[in-house]
Amino acid sequence: MTPLLSLIARRKRLLGREEASTPRDILTLPLEAQDPQTGAGLSNTEVKANILTFIAAGHETTANALTWSLFLLSLSKEWQAILADEANTGLSGPVEDYTARLVATKAVIEEAMRLYPPAASMSRQAISPDDLAGKRIRKGTLVIVAQWILHRHRLLWEKPDCFDPRRFLPGSREKIDRFAYLPFGAGPRVCIGASFSIQEAVTILAHIMRSFSFELKKDHVVTPVQRITLRPKGGMPMILRRRDHYPASAQVARLYPGGRAASMS
Image 1 (cartoon, helix red, strand yellow):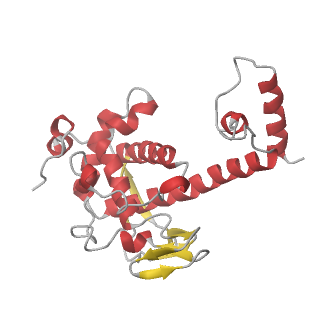
Image 2 (cartoon, rainbow, N blue to C red):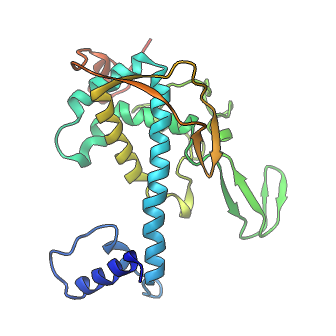
Image 3 (cartoon, one colour):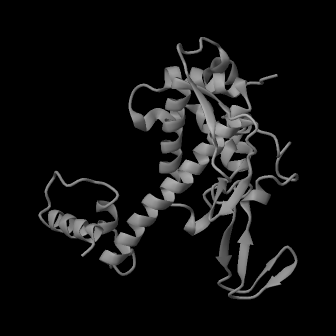
C-alpha cells in the first residue's frame, strides 16, 4: 500500500469513530463526498487521484502565476511601490482575509494570468453536434480554447498587450465579460482550486513585496514556453534587494481610495 493510500485508510478509521478532533481538510472532504443522485462515495483510488491532482496542479500553476507576476512587476517600479505599500498595511489579521485587503496585489496576479495564463490552452470534447463560429461541430470533436489568444483579443480588451492591473481593480473588474477571461476555465469543469490558488498567490506575493525590491537579471531574454503549463524558458533570474524600510507613500490610497478604483493619470 502506498503512503497516500495508507493515510486514506487511517483517516477513514478516524472518521468511523466520529471524533470531533477529525480535521476538516482536503482529505476529509472528498472522503465524505457523495453523489447527489446515487449516494455513492469516491473509491480510495479516486480520492488518491484527486488529492494528487489538487496538490501537484496547484503547486505548478500557482508557481507559474507568481513567476510571471514578478516578471511584470520588474518592469514597473510604480506597481512595485504600490504593492509594497499595500503589503505593509494589509498583512495583518486573519490569513483568510488577506485577499479582501490586498486588492492591488490580487489585481496584479489576475493581470499576470491574463497576459501569461498558467494554462495557456484547454480542450473540450463536444458531447453533441453544435455550431461554432459558423462551423459545424460533430459529436466527439475536440475543441481547443486558447486562453493566450482570448486574453489578448483586441475586440475584448483595451490595449491587450499592455500590463495594466487597473483593469482588475474594483469598479473595473466587474465589466470584464465572464468568458473573456478564463485562467481557471469555466463551466462544470472549472478549476476546483481557483479560490485557494488566488489566496495562496496573493499571500506569497505580498510577503515578497513587503521584504524585497527586485529587477530582472541584465540581458536575460524572457521567452514563454508551453509545457502543459506556461513557463519561462531558462527560468526567471532576478536580482533581489532587501527593503530597509517600508515605502511611505499614498500610492495605494490614490489607487483605490475607500476601496474604489481611481485614475492613475
